Length: 201
Image 1 (cartoon, rainbow, N blue to C red):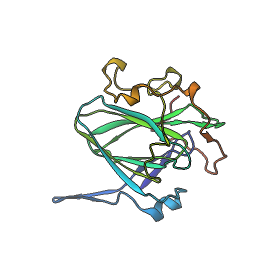
Image 2: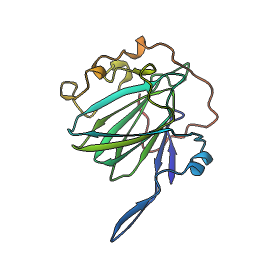
Image 3: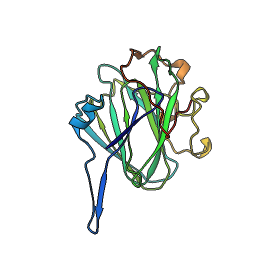
Image 4: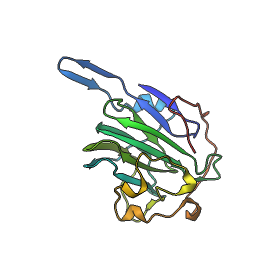
């Protein structure tokens, strides 16, 4: 498995090996011991699977607060998404900055999004299926969101605002400037290493 870092510390891009032959393929998509070697110490408690029928579906930006804040490991088993993680750790040197990358069934990449980030994605193909592991159970009392199209975030979404397909709830999340300090930033031990997948603000 290849593990790459971004200039926004904490988020990582994982690319599992995939072995193909005339029958199809085999891939180890999660290995607890391997992730632990790279500083990802997590116990997942729930797997989620979503289907978005149309291209241009935007889901997010979502997160849960303490005591049920979630680490997430996201991958795409069918189709493709433009995936985004926004740093909402108050006091972080990259507060309000975001990481974005394409996850697809073809590139087989995964995005590790720790607690303290708002996460969302836009489908790039119809009938896209996203699967993700989380470290805390869903709790509606801790469920929160961040406005996907807040200009302050500067996210270059691959869909025009008027064409984006959102749930009613996702249309009304607060902007970054309106967000309470849910996640006080603590210093991270790892060095942020830029990768060719880049970093955006």
